[in-house]
Length: 170
Image (cartoon, rainbow, N blue to C red; front, side, top):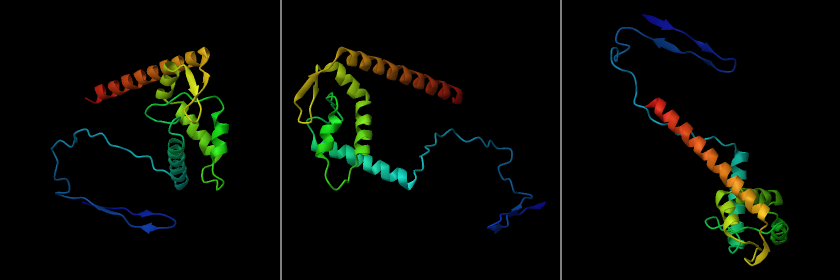
């Protein structure tokens, strides 16, 4: 039995020929079910997204290198209020790192779990040179507790969903 079909596109004309016949399906009668393998899908980034990611990492590295007493990813310290103004005064004149990128990096830095934990552990906020600037207000510590609680709840929900999905597939 021969089946021929053709697929025509406006720009490209391609002919697709499918031939089936005796012996076309050598695995007939055998189980076609493959063992479950988790596929890793990587998000395809546009060139613009790639450049943003590179500039973000460059700005984060610049902050950690320029102000090591204040910015540390493994052991963050609570930053003083309006520290962004002090950082802007240290930016270079060539504008290799924009103010917008600095704000984005700071938003990332202060929304991390470790940063909120440091708000609960420390009593003072810190300047760029690592000296104490001001005391942490009780309302900010309560907010940090609430944020950590929300993050823990979200993690528990994600974990439960993951276990539920794995239970269905097993």
